[in-house]
Length: 328
Image (cartoon, rainbow, N blue to C red; front, side, top):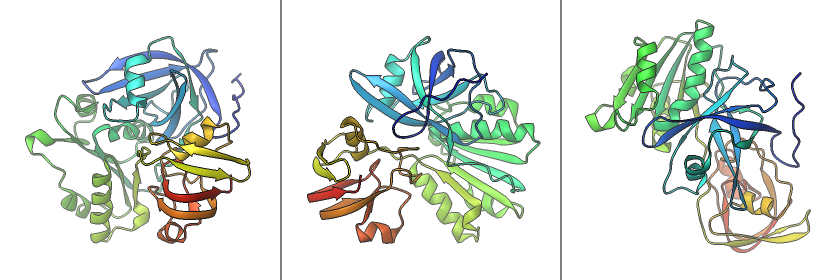
């Protein structure tokens, strides 16, 4: 019998896990595998889903989203791959430096914001760097259903080509790898022009790559609904600011190196989330009063929402000014 989910006041439901494997893949990337301590099966997930990993770092709780890259047909294990970011906010460094086999950790139930469109006649995957991770699960899922796919994977070098050798060995006719240090690049225009009607394109990687794919596809007449992307944004530092939360009846301070969402959580305020990267819309919050400027960084709100100053995404956006009152 599957254990009942562990509930939480805010965000997604949680799952207690044990770290079952820590596998360094190259100088920057390590794979972490998890099992359930009671031996139960994990909740099912579809390829493209992510989980949020909870880390207890010297009294601070870090919550980082990572794509599930394990085979969706194997409910005994969840796996993620984490790229170490020495200039980041500390989550990836914590995973690389502190997490070891046997540790008890907490994950959220999977959420999919980057799913395969199974109506597609063909699926073309474009990966940049650690953006390869969701495609590992997508490939496993499509291979089991005899789906038509191909992968184009851009890496900085052969040494940093995470899973590149494995993928080329298993699927030599479907996987194409390009190394920056060898002046190799994806020929995107020819690639897009050569696809059959009904093809869907998926891109995961740096922001510049994602924008390039969307812009080029639009210029070549691709319907927007046939081009899919995923980018989780990390909250950027900024000047500290003060926020009044009218429902909670408290005033909180948002520090330079924490997000508004993290500040609310630190103060014990219920703060919903699913992705924590500005993409899902779960934490969208109404603005009651504002005297200042918003620094919007999300993918969720449209230009009109940004301009009107009536909504904010606390996971990635900030505020510069005197007064901010939120309906939270």
